[in-house]
Image (cartoon, rainbow, N blue to C red; front, side, top):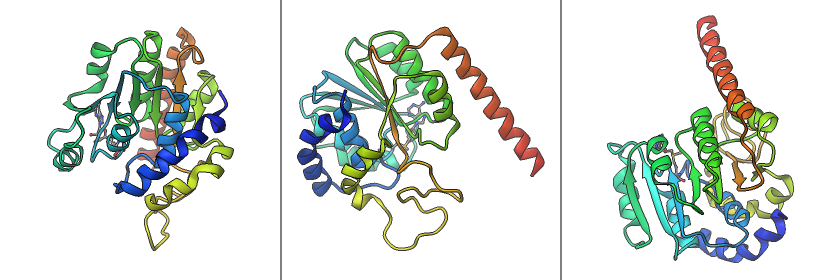
Length: 248
Ligand SMILES: C[S@@+](CC[C@H](N)C(=O)[O-])C[C@H]1O[C@@H](n2cnc3c(N)ncnc32)[C@H](O)[C@@H]1O
């Protein structure tokens, strides 16, 4: 796949959506949603399952990008104040189904051949574990994971053990399409935890933004070694965190 030539025809649609749609902080960036469309090569799947809805930023953009696709959006926290906000925002869309529950249980049960899955909660190694479990079934056309920028241990694991992923922090992609995200960055006041391009937390990001990774069917293989490597990487990370806590 050539990411840039797959993305260019979708740009006018995303520019229109970005202009018409408000942006909720912590939501998936417009350029990352363009990346998702490009990885699907302009194809419209019958169903997209989204895990992690919060205020429904990504759900809203999916509903607009894929008006004839069923968008099944799963949220775990049914008590969150985000729920009514998402419900109100998504009410006009007949193609959106709002579900509640734990995706790590629900998605493996409901997964059908050809589904596209977007995981934006759970996070960290739990997200990777779910993604690999789904890819291993051979059913999904593609599985997307959010929050895999170059600084996080999950990305280090993926780079080492799961070849074949494509990422939205591809430099040429970022240069050409970052303009879509102008309204996503907080206005006024860069402080060391501000979420802005290449900035988040004290040390900053090594990627442009939170970053989406894509596992396309046939391009990513999940062997026993990768599954075992995941458990080791996740254990090392947890041990590292608990040692750091004790040293503090
Ligand atoms: C960063 S937010 C999602 C943002 C959203 N995709 C957007 O673009 O606006 C992550 C969400 O994932 C939810 N979540 C965490 N674990 C989950 C799970 N196992 N199943 C479903 N949702 C989960 C959290 O409750 C939270 O609302």
